[in-house]
Length: 88
Image (cartoon, rainbow, N blue to C red; front, side):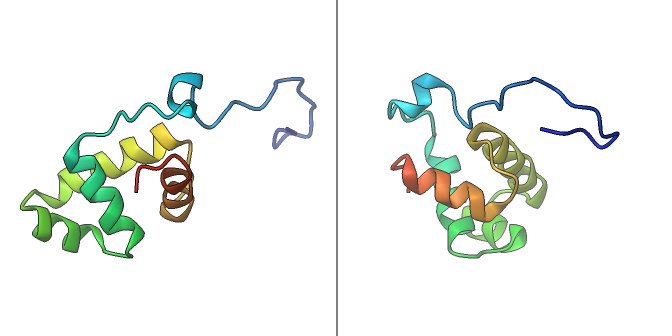
């Protein structure tokens, strides 16, 4: 990877998921699975919140945590990773 300032780095890319998760262990609870399913269907945070009877803020917080856990930069990448792992 080349930093913005143009200097080079020898840092190796980090894996998207740790080895335990890559081996198929399923660390999701039912709420996170429901959020992922609705996200992958294109639902907005507001729609997810209404359907699951939780606050929009909780959806935003859980979505951020899921993206981080999956090593995804956006919802699409999260859906691809979750499907690859069999979480969806």
